[in-house]
Length: 348
Image 1: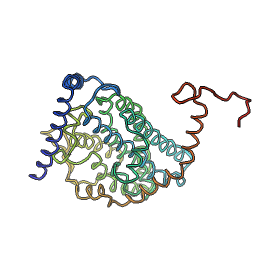
Image 2 (image 1 turned 180 degrees about the vertical axis):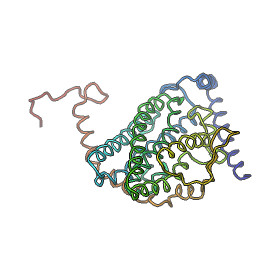
Image 3 (image 1 turned 90 degrees about the vertical axis):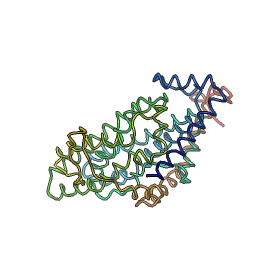
Image 4 (image 1 turned 90 degrees about the horizontal axis):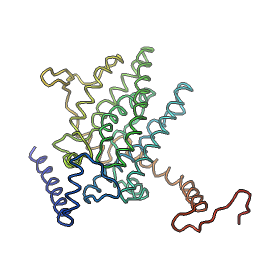
């Protein structure tokens, strides 16, 4: 615990130093920023903001965007093996949604002065993270349901408060993303319900998937509060509204009655209702596993990044073609000649 306290003190001291530097450089605008955050006003791209606030947003939004893009892989693995046309169409729509979420978030991050190319380069080089949950394999069709119910359910619990984030572009992007994530969660729940009420083999498959995805889903909320390097400052800036542990407890409270309705058992014998606290207690999380996955030692870390790099390289021609088209048809943009080719005109 002493090491954790020292860790927190180090980051708190760094945050205080950043705030002091920003305030010293521009005390009037620093005071106006603090007042806007305190009043729950939105900070917009052209507003003055502390450099540490901008850097914290870039880190969080980049990780969020990367998670959406990498998160396409585990379920896309099952598109060609979906058991029916209906299931295939649903899964295709979901994976396409995840791609769109990544694009929304990269666009929002670009309003902070960073480029999409820079963020992707850092992802491919392993210098920026994505959610550890996507470093686990999807072994059976039931995993698609477990990801929808648990992983997307955890995402919703974490992301709905982000609709009130202090940074405007991020908050507005989250409104649409959360609506679509709700669809993802419901399709996963419905898939597991069908399996749970199916044959004994199907029920067993659903239970096995829940057994494997439950604990990684709890890890999605990040390390415990006393070990979190960023939560305290992010909450002070109202980038996030609740601590990791608070969101994790809320998620458990949501899942317990849902699991009962599914006829499935959460793989934690220590889950029980705490009458005094008005919430569920649950067992200890294996944080050693969490740290190992973060270090790149998870079951699929290398595979996920290798596939992402390959997809980026093989998609270069699409990006080049889109850029060439935009340049050719640009009008009124900086650097444009102001001319366009009309229908029927010959081109060189």
